[in-house]
Image 1 (cartoon, helix red, strand yellow):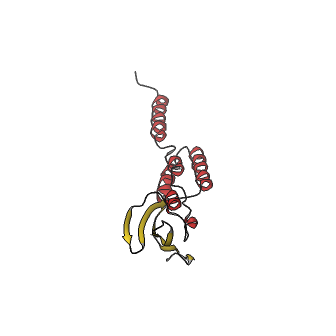
Image 2 (tube, helix red, strand yellow):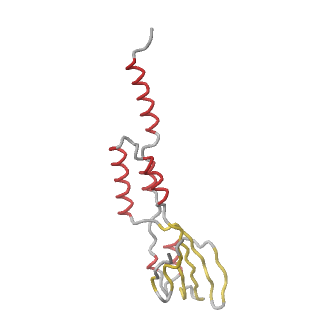
Image 3 (cartoon, helix red, strand yellow):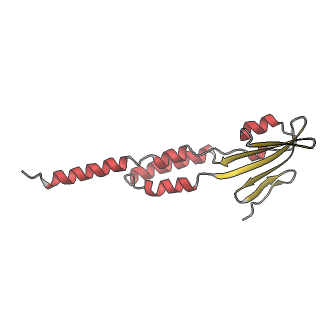
Length: 154
């Protein structure tokens, strides 16, 4: 005995819902786990090395220089907590409103806005205090001592 048409349609709908249920939350999770914003403004001449490492983590490279040493820090500059929270709520609402079809746009957007690679070159004196630094992003120099913020090169 053949199955009724509505049963086949229900099975297809169920299969579509199950397939789409694998997607929901991906852009939400991506937005929630984006890196946080590191406060480059805390970097200044005279700041102790311990505070620099607290803000930027362990250096990726280090070398001795005349009168001290230099360290290089690298991280993915992210976003403030409020902005991340807004994005999480937005993606969740868009998922609910579009029955999770938003994920086809939301996931690539979150991948694109995953933060920018940032590098800080910092020189210390023998007492482990900053004597000079430069912060670079993918677009160019964004902060340099003793000059302060610099407009990124476009």
